[in-house]
Image 1 (cartoon, rainbow, N blue to C red):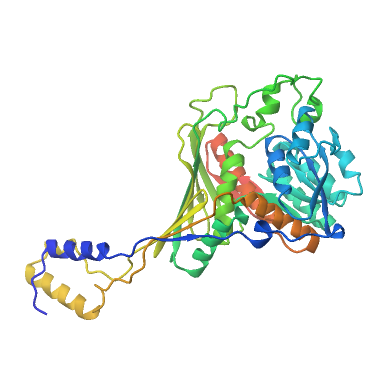
Image 2: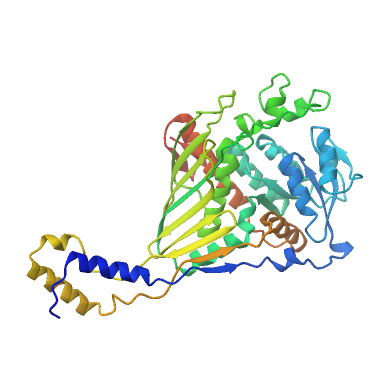
Length: 450
């Protein structure tokens, strides 16, 4: 070949190749049959459940159970009396027994499984008591409030041989299942960088929930709420906005990082703890007495890739997880997955050779074309988009997964080890932020070190 290549020729070939790419292909994912059209379940196979904690999340979970075949709510519990009525409304049964004392529920022989939707600092003792009482457990995320709590909860579940599902529902989503299939097939190539964020920009998104007008020491069991936390006078702000305070919650890491972390663990099959985490951030807008920042960013070192997570309560960008591979990119936003292939064909160097004499440059390009005769041929592989149908609920799928496991005694998608590893990622982020240092995970000692 004897052609004089110019930089303009080179750019034109690349542009033409890009222009011939295939149009995006759209696939509407189908829900699992059990969720879409559940078969009738006989009385002997009906799972009788109770919810311990019936705040906003507890009521969401109770409402979801009404869409799962063969599940009956037989009792509810909350420390705030008005939530008893809210729970009864969620299951559409005003006659469901309600109590403030969760141990009354655990004493009942007709309760097979419990939903734990209490503040994070109460997870451990309710969880341990439920396992000891022979109840299977669906426990809201994050699984634990401290490193020690998580391992104690694992021990309790194993000792009692209980089925446990942790409540990061997206790991049961048909969209995340599609992302995992994409990852496992190798279409992304080698993935070394994962980026995820969950940003909000509203008082509700920052947990500035209104205080109900009937909230008082008469309608709320304040001492039971405090539990093992430091004693203090009645404070409805702390009761209803507990996620803001380190005594009871895990802040943005425990509320939102845990979803991102669980999704990344599930899709990559990396059920382990990051070796190291480094956080930054600050409390910029919501200076209302809270302990946690309204912006946190954390870098994690995993054995085979690096992860960047962010939560910002001062600008609404929604939720996002991006997997950046050598052969393609996968982006998750809400109920949509987008896959975009990278053009990984061998290409001649197109920049530095323009500092060579023309003769050497043309020889190099001619030799490259001889060694790679098909490098201009672009495989017609375009962007693919996958989405769940309108009305699809991954929360219902996650609970279906749990209740099926209660019947079959088979594994769930997010057991206690999986949930604990995700929670440990939250603890690493907060440790690094508050101590202003890198957080290093000591696997042998099961401790976070600086």
